Length: 196
Image: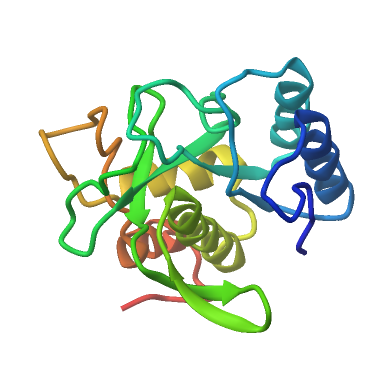
């Protein structure tokens, strides 16, 4: 379900984002993509994030596009899976924010997308990377609906392709998402859909 929380210039308040999160949760969302953020933490936004998390929703957010280690919110909240962007060769995109709060990375440069005036465009940003992870969370939940939000997040984090220095690091988090491996992890014990 698409929920508009920003204006046509891409600006909005933490109040509007918080309202959108709560509305999505109350209308059945089980995975929420937040391709937005700012550098000012908001108690109201954090409460909405906790509201969703406490109701078993997976929240995924873009880390930001300023090549900065400054935490961006909601991505830096502990209940949110924070996503950075990589180039097609696996290198960190020149704009992608980084830091201790970063969880994973996904493709985020020249991503085909819908655009204004009924057009398509190739767009770059962590806002393009986050939907890849959101789609993966949705796939995991569709394959194994009994998994909790923490289990879905754990699967995404543990099934990555490690990039950069070994283990979790500030540039790539746990690494590049790996859809096939994540689906294998999600399918363990699920006899209805055996993966080969």
